[in-house]
Image (cartoon, rainbow, N blue to C red; front, top):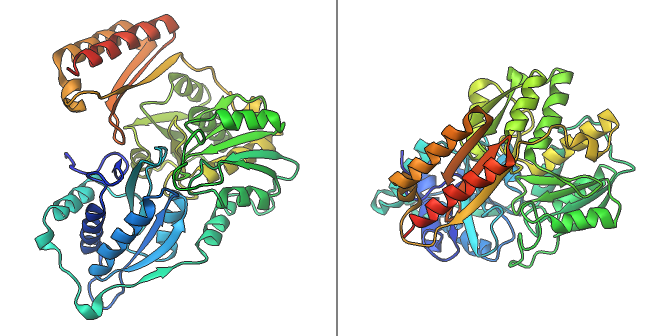
Length: 453
């Protein structure tokens, strides 16, 4: 089912340009409200959170206008991680939750993510229904003057989420004696994340924690980890934690300043969960982007790996369908179904620290469990007017992809996809032989670029 506005993670785009305009946010609020509002005397409500982008104020106000115009109470929680909005939607018994964020993108972009009353992201068919109403404003049933909604600020929202994160671990677990660098990406977790690790007993050095509306993800966070790695080495810390702008994902680094990505985190935690008898379904869920080395390592240790489409929502859907309670993405979206409904960078970091303490090992030992297959992941910027889907369907592009996969055989993989959040085509090639990886990646990228004209 083709969607007009929604990508793999909500609606996203350049702030104040279609589709991310205040008018769109207002119509989105009305459309979502019409679909999710209660019938009868029950009060309808929506939780609205945001990250620290300057444009967040504008979209918050527009969404508030849209929802209240169809009779919703807007429960405003301010700057708050995406997983907190999912959790608060359930806790506050809201009909729906909204997070205003463009995740790891810089401040120029913004986006809107939606959660159902159970805290899970909406399925494709519901997003399609929302899109139909956005384009048919005459079908919106506005509230009567005496039934227009109100906006209420939830002052204790941060404390509720902090306790949820700490409750993901045994009550007697502490981080005393550990020194941790926390890079908050100048984003949604800039207050909450350092407080959680400090309350757990760690000595916390926090960076990327001075947002000004324009510096979110700028030279910091999970996609720009140099500052975290340098701080870990400078302060001789035990672990570095880099969140993204809405804190639903993370990348770690060990005490030596070496990166630990989502695949390595999943390997460490999955084996621990299996040993403790708490890994459900006998497998984890991971996307097509996860390294073949992870799948091999898990198989050797009696754990399966179910591959899904790219996007933590698809990982979550597979987990729910197959009774799996742990999964995630190489990029650092990690979902612990026993503790939440979406990717949560803070909970993932706490779980990794718990395994570290439980095994009495350093991060450098725990965080590099398997040898990765050589892999190249490149982003090809769309420079022309031809849509990504059309480029990928061209005969020359299809032919070079098929030929590369055939030549790699069972010793490698090719995975090409259109980004659901940015104007990019993502090219991933991996193989036992690094020279094959480079050769095939360059051929595929060159063919894609030639077919943009």
